[in-house]
Amino acid sequence: MRQHSRSLWGAARKWPFRLLPLAVLALCLTACGPAVSSAQRATPPATLGAGVQSYQASAARISTTMGDSLDKVQSLMGNAQPSDPTWRSALSQQLLVWHQQYLQAQKLRPPAQLSAANATFVSAMANYDAAGKDIAAALNTSNATRFASAKQELQAANQGMQQAHQQLQAAAGLG
Image 1 (tube, rainbow, N blue to C red):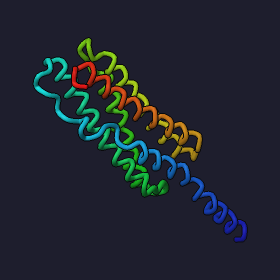
Image 2 (cartoon, rainbow, N blue to C red; image 1 turned 90 degrees about the vertical axis):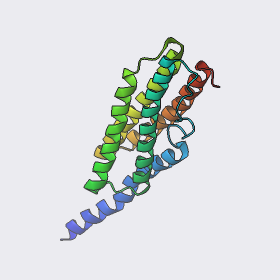
Image 3 (cartoon, rainbow, N blue to C red; image 1 turned 120 degrees about the vertical axis):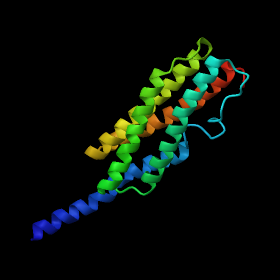
């Protein structure tokens, strides 16, 4: 009986330290904010060419879905419960959204003047996808290094999204 108590206590003592990477990741999500602001998700003006408008509308749908998912993940991480199957399932669903949106971004076919902005956008989406994979792996293995990697990927993704938005505005003559 004594060994059993000790092993349970040992697991209980380690558990708060397993939550530390989740807390760091939650802070990163909070500090980084959503992928794009609501102003950046706005519908493009009608004065742009049809190809630019179509591309911007498609990219805006991806950005909006990604921003909504990031908000949900931020909320989940703010109340991290890695031992709860419902919490893990909700997080996994959002990480799947990240992957699906990355795949959608890869399918975009921009007009020539938006090719640089598109490359930056797809790269940012690749960073979100990589972060999602790192988060999932970190939860499954309790590997703090994977959480640190996810944090770096999220920061790179958010910076890339801001850069893509600026490039898109400049290329479309809106910035």
